[in-house]
Length: 276
Image (cartoon, rainbow, N blue to C red; front, side, top):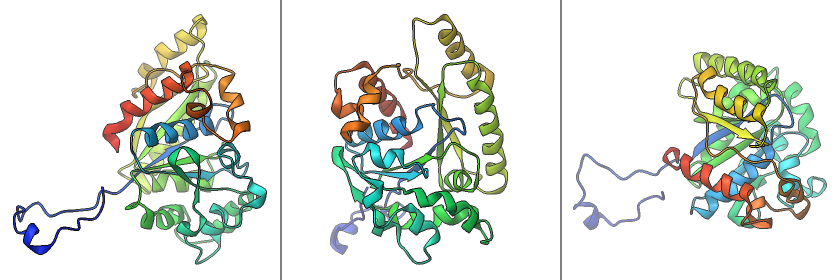
């Protein structure tokens, strides 16, 4: 994961056709233009789960509502350098915005001023590549970079999809959520065609799942076949524990370690490890 520090004599024993190389972080956009699908909860919980597995994790709050920032115990009102300044501030480094949080994760926080970033980015050449450019120097320092996208398909979400190697789509197990997933997949197809050919959908993440509901079970059974995509397992159960965690500035993995919700995110993170 880190740059080789072997001396030249040690390097002589290496095979010449297998030079050492630094493994770059896998960047994942967690996206769905529909609100209320547990995007922020999923970013915070998967980040904590990857950290538990020994991964170096950076979370990026790309939503002007700054819910991820608040959920990790950082007051957006006190943030001096945020993702907003990094994207539009001309010369502000992403490294300067990093805040170390509990549970072994780092964060690039957001502020309400990010709401004006789309208008500022619109006239810039290559505006969809700004996030990729500012995150590139950090990829040697982390194993996983998770981006919490805003509930829209605007310039910021396009930036996340262009910067990412993978996308995870949280989806509430309700039939109306299908439409939102289809629209996002159309956008992903466009991004792959024009901006980021290597982008891969890592899977749909079922959230707020109530296994007692026949409707929820039917939606879960249908979603993978409908879109021909992997459905990450297990589905994330609906529980009040998720609502309690942000008030404490921690993820559910810290506030309710043995809960079904915490264990579900651990299991999903484990299943995603081959991508990191």
